[in-house]
Image 1: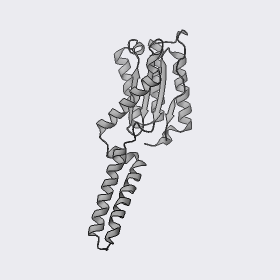
Image 2 (image 1 turned 60 degrees about the vertical axis):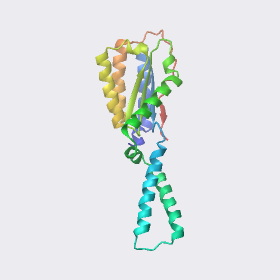
Image 3 (image 1 turned 180 degrees about the vertical axis):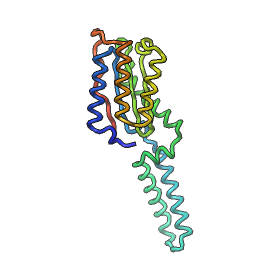
Image 4 (image 1 turned 90 degrees about the vertical axis):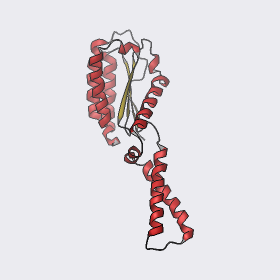
Length: 209
């Protein structure tokens, strides 16, 4: 999944989309887009170990003779190379990490942000977090009680499905479209009254290192 899909133009469009939601509804929406929700360091070590084993087999059975004193050093270098390559590759991390673990890491990271960023502490309990994690190709939506009690379950779940699909594909355009549709739903059932102060920053939070 390429971070280029969340370039400057996409970020500006998403920022404008969030501001639009804030003007049409009493909901307080926070959008967070992250490269990943965990370092998955174990995947780096696993790929390093696999490359080291492959390198050792090559050294032992190659028709070319290698000096025994260099074998250990070369195996260590193979391990370091594998770990480095994995650390730079989302594809390798996904291949070497279970789907269940990735989903759990995203849920935990989203839940932590929901509380630590104060989204769960708005005056009217209308905080919403839309959390996108690109490596895992997952999106989590956490909404406070004031939002959930205002939304018809069927319509809310339809919007969640569209958001989850945008997160799965890692597409900024689809995410923008899904957020616009969410804006319509929120404006319908939780319209702006002018009585709810803007307690959370409108700007989306991008961490795409």
